[in-house]
Image (cartoon, rainbow, N blue to C red; front, side):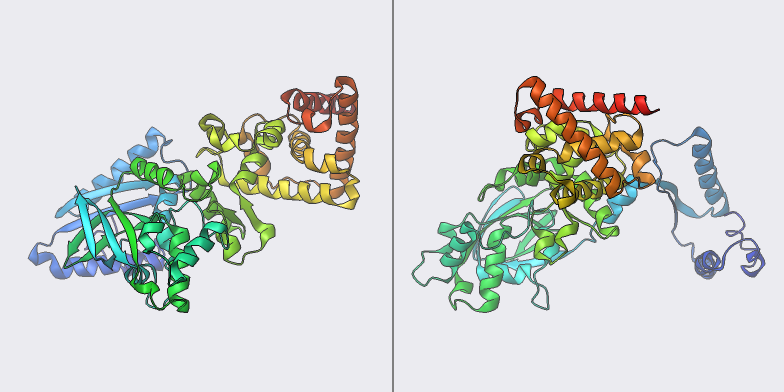
Length: 459
């Protein structure tokens, strides 16, 4: 750095030390600096050191190097008003990847009321349509990223919305519809037009889709002049945003999994799956509507149950209380945590899909009850076999996922036969049916004991 900022040394003389791309970039800065130096320009030098590691866990020696680099900048560029060295780790890089460049959109309205910086407006459907479509008439799907689910198709609520849009005898649309809720960073009004910055439509996606389809297809000439109730909430506070999302998304039945969809860890999992050609359906229906391969679409519930079975050795929870895994905060944080490597989630999803496919195949020779009740227990036993002992924390799955540990169909068949055999013994001993047994932790621990005894006897 010191050499490249030394104007007495030519860029060409540094070619033996640094790569051409770096020298070209520094050359642009040096040329501008030399030409403007007599005008005393305001210079800011900001260095970013990016790494896939953990930026919160650096050694004192490395921190000293960062401080030394900053001192080099200050001494080499004495006119610099600011000089900073910023370290970006994996979490910071993911956060930047998820950021969308600032944008502002206009929306005309008919009437409005204001409280503080937030507003309620009556908006013509045609004006709302203009807000949610781009210059090519396509729906701006990024406006709905913070919605907890995607368009749900021809469900009864959407049929009713469509009917109220297209029927000439229908009362005012905004009398019958809950409207939409917009969260934005800034909202200003001039001549009955709002300028809305960085908006997200967090409630009303079903309504928005029906308005989009109705006006685009011209189902009703009058539809565009009907009115919609629009709530505009100005906030940058994440906690407030999440409260608004949870409070307003109740017009149609919604699962606890969907209410987790906007969590940062869920967005990170989705982005990682995309890099691997898989699709994490944190917003229910999004990838199905986008025409993606159903075999590679993974729901929040499926992933939560898979990681619970494999990473907590609790297939009984996966089988018996799948909804509570996402409803209970403590259970949820055990499975979905920023400290868990993202590749663990994809590895677990792939393995569970393999298990599900095997149990449903003729090779498994499973009866109806076994197909319904044993898939998560088989996954737990596979992990126990691969790891040499049970895993009790999802973070421990990293060792298996990093080497893409796997089993073939022959191993699956052998382990499933043992599972069926052990299950039969347990059911006779306890006098219970399989469905009841698989929902109890006692059965899970019994299976792990049998697996351990088998491993020790063959060691």
